[in-house]
Image 1 (cartoon, helix red, strand yellow):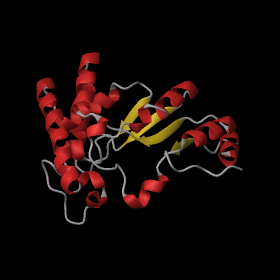
Image 2 (tube, helix red, strand yellow):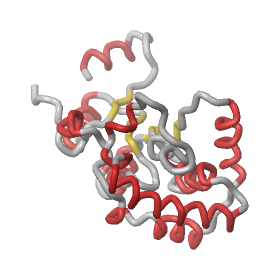
Image 3 (spheres, helix red, strand yellow):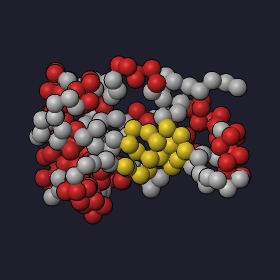
Image 4 (tube, rainbow, N blue to C red):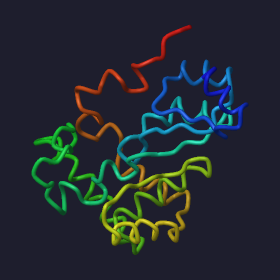
Length: 199
């Protein structure tokens, strides 16, 4: 952070952001120089940051860039409406495997039914839910297809009431999501477990 602060002072960069930092890292880093944004995984089925990270970010004035806002493509239909391509890395994620995937498909069906009610697609509803979590949270859905990008942009037109947002949350209770969000290989590097060393 000290080196990044120097780069800001030299005019070489304007802002500083961190990816998947622990609570302790955020606090220590922010004391050195204000952090502008955090990149964190956040979606309907990955909401662990709601209890600790989001409140801390709001207290410190830090924005959140939500990656994998469609649950690594799950709410775009990956593994449900379309099969995963051979060699796909998704096969390494517990939520996309065997019994976990079968259980998670029920969550997809619930969101799909709500999407029909709102006259939207499932990805649009999942992104609209995220957009309604606060102006300080910006989703970054990734896609390789123009049609998906156009579909995702349609989420901006969906206006949800507080009751709608709650209904969508209730359709995907976090305790019913089956499987860890990350591959076993990366599990020790998640924000809850990993921390930067003290100076």
